[in-house]
Length: 166
Length: 388
Picture 1: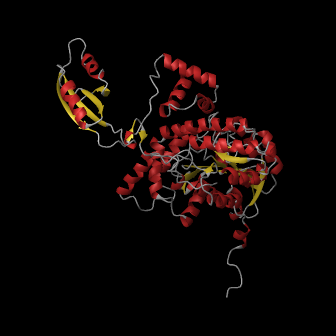
Picture 2: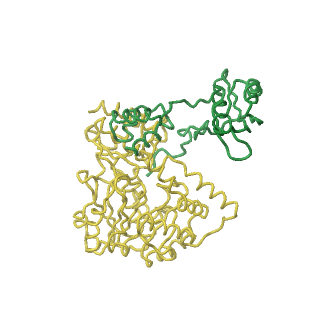
Picture 3: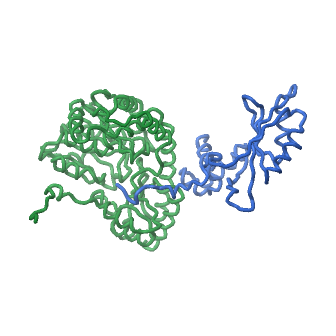
């Protein structure tokens, strides 16, 4: 059972769009069983959503800017970093927050339409939080690989094999 | 002016491979989805490639020992012991070759005397028969049957053996049928082999790509090690076809003879490929497991798709080929493949190029992206529906 759950998840991890019928064929189980597995995984929140990986740069009038912000914070007594992190991740501009080891505490990924917009968010919202001691902002210039997927990589175009071989 | 052909009679008498003819046909067409490819769709895992860059930067551009780098032979020896429980002395019982193909050639040339017969199991890899002939032997084919799931039976060996029989070539799991023999089935074969004192060339290039049972290596059975040359390599499971790297392991006397021929005809396998293989042996397992899992899923997909469209296709136990029957369509293998290519631009390989018992079947490689496989099945279904 757990093995099947893992296999389903591995299949849809790279392609959330894969139909249950196809998953069933690949795993050699019934389609009903696939739906049952998916339902179960949704219920226990192993599957949190089905998002789409988009290369916004391909869509001319919808260009996104991403910044990775290193944030040093003052942890609070009792709740540590969690409360501070929550204050930050509640903002819709924030796409990801990680607690880090090393020179700073939180790594915050922020998305916006322009650098100005992100700059405004950081100076007016993020830095203005009481527990935030300092921020260092790095803008993303180009995405090569995201969530395990290489952008601009079409496996079928890269097939260098001959048409027929023994 | 020259009066005669300079080509030797023996070379002239070799039949051109049926695959070649079909390749020429398919190569002229556009938008072909090919299920005709006998190699992985994966590119060699990056860590193997990266390791070979490093070796080049370090200046490893010279020859290696004739038998291959000792570290690589040691890794191969460890790998075979760990994976299949067969134990070979890296110094005396392992030779690294230019693909498993060269290992087959060397093994035959090292062992076969003129006029001796070598049993070749068909449908089988297209190179066995000509390679036996080139080594001076007489190929004698055994036709496995669809009702046995194309598995060789001990009785079939009994029927084919004569006083001149020297050896038998086994390919397990099999190209093109995907048939994988279980330990019990191999034990039955081993009994007959021992009774007739045959040498076994066991081509296990697809060993890692076995989906139901754990692969049993032929030399791991009983006393078979002393009469078996195990042939394998990096092409299939490690996705390294173009590197041309294989190996053979076996009794010292045979391997030493193979190395002797190898040293005069090849010197050594490509050094850079040997370095990539070293990384493959040491750290390749996660990559191989990942690829094998993906092949298994695609096997399930293609087998159920083929059966759904009305082409009877048993579940192949290994390799990356499905071998469905196309008899329902009333076409010969060659006509089926040719018409499918012309009408739907899908390339499959007619089964008869792998031996006469392959007639009525086609080989579909599922080492193709799922997207392509899906589209190929759609097109094939349309093609088949018109005919049955």
